[in-house]
Amino acid sequence: MDEAATEGNWRKWVEQHTPRFLLFARQKARTEADAQDLVQDAVLEAAQRRPDGAPPPAALVFATIHRRAIDLARGDDRRLERELAIAATVGTSWFDTTAEDREMKQLVEGALKRLPEPYREVVMLKTWGDLTFAEVASVLGIPANTAASRYRYGLAEMRKLMKGVLA
Amino acid sequence: MSELHDQELKSFEAELRKVQVAPAPDALISRLLAVRPRPQPTVVDRIHSEPQAYAWTRLLRWLAPATALGALLLVTFGRHPSPPAGPSGTNSQQPQSASASLASAVQPGNRDEIEIGRTLVATFDAVAEMPSGEPVRFRCQEWADTTVFRDRARGIAIERSTPRLEIVPISFETY
Image (tube, rainbow over the protein chains, first blue to last red):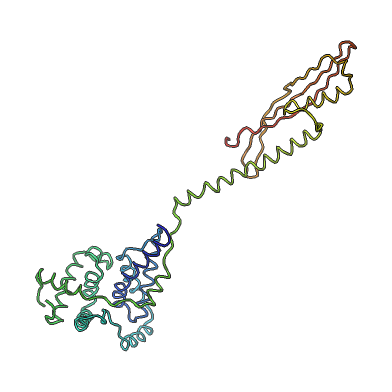
């Protein structure tokens, strides 16, 4: 594969997957800056595991974000408190609010944010990350059956929170 | 919490999938594009790149022995310079040049027989060592080029013997 084709593939891969990586990272990080740094570091780390220069599997990047987010959470408590205060004032929309159905997207985002994290991350990875249950299980380090049951529970809870807006 | 039936779950999931994820900031996209990994040379690439360097090494291997051989030949033939207008030929040039110098001392009409001969005096193999430590073998042959002028009328015979050393590299691959 020549250099131009490789660069084209990389650009296409970045533009396609980065929004999903960032959505997942936003759930893990306390600030938008941390979320973006998580994505960049995870993409770089995952890409370096491919000696052929090809884009890494999305599941590997999700797993790296998950692991790095855990490491980040073990950081300085004072720093976290300061970042939490900033995060409370600076809101970042998880979904595309510039398109139509803005109200619907806000409902989805609100319901997703209110889900307990174990369910939220499974719903996010399965629905918007386009991962299989096996991949979700691999990313989070849980059994595939657990991932499936959490997904089902998470969807039911979201639907309840949205009070029957959707089908 | 109400349970979802499979049909309801699929329908709700389909609705959720319609919600588009917010686009990533351009700054982040630019940062990720900038960190595009470059393919690292594989083992196969490295193996394929070796023969070129190896070919140069092999070429340079000849340089040291060839230079030594050239210097040796220069010293050997430098002791017996041949006249510039000698007859063509390689091996017979040295005896013929010697015979020409002797013939000038003998009257042309008096010489009735000229013999030119080559005698192998000695042969042996020599092993030299390259700077890299690789042994190189040479076959050394010591010849005696003999020229005899006879004038039977006067009963004169002039014989001249010239030593000559031939050094031929035998192999650079073995050992």
